[in-house]
Image 1 (cartoon, rainbow, N blue to C red):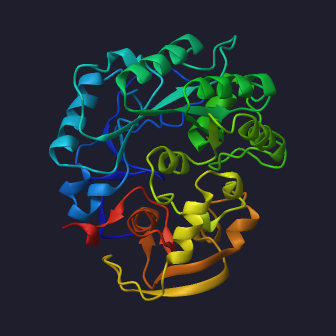
Image 2: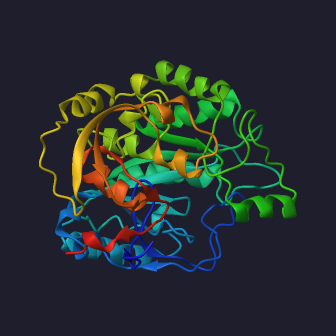
Length: 364
């Protein structure tokens, strides 16, 4: 696809700014270690002033943000100077005590503290439960928002009831949320699993792939524990839903409310907010996006990623998307779709290609 702006990089939940390193913590399941060196230094408002409020992740590429703490802090300085108002996320498994306590950032800053849930022998994870517990305590001292990133959950390694409840107990102690998901396996990681003979096996009913699948027998554990710890912790299948809850947003930025059964909307503390927002969307809204569009109402719309063949294991929601959608009659990228969701709350009906880059039309 032509006319892409390739100096800014986007993941599913964030615009990703920062720099990769040639080394990290050595997690055996890492999906960020793809062999590509990444350096994306532009901040959102340098692309478009409308991007002032989009979610941003700092140094989420290969190379933990605490390993390159000076670099991480320099991006926070620039975001603060630019007056960025959207959530700024730092996901780390490194030593959070490297983050300065005496420098208070005027940002909506959020620490996602990663854990594998257990210490294993042999060691598959580059962190440790001791470091994770200490990071939780230090995050409380820092005074910013923080939550737990419990991922990836791997078949018969860290998916037992005791391990999952231990993570809930820690979340409850800190009155915070948990983001969780299964193992995402890129072609590179799949080869590494075979070469290293790692004991990672896919869950029943789903082969290895880019979808971070967990079977009902595992998600039901989270559902039960959500009820048990309802007053002090909650686990979310999607990070953007967790961020919306923790930051008091009026909706999930990624508009997962168009797939309520797939992501467990009905038991989510954001359910009423998100559904009220979805129901408030109008066919008459004047939306400021750089594409010709119309707003249509659809029933049983089929997700474009499934049509493209990118998603090999769709849920029932993937063929039953309903509500008001922005219809665009030109080819766009999945990043364009993300930006439209972040800025408007609508999902999109268009022909699109999978890409971490946006169309040049957004540049102002």
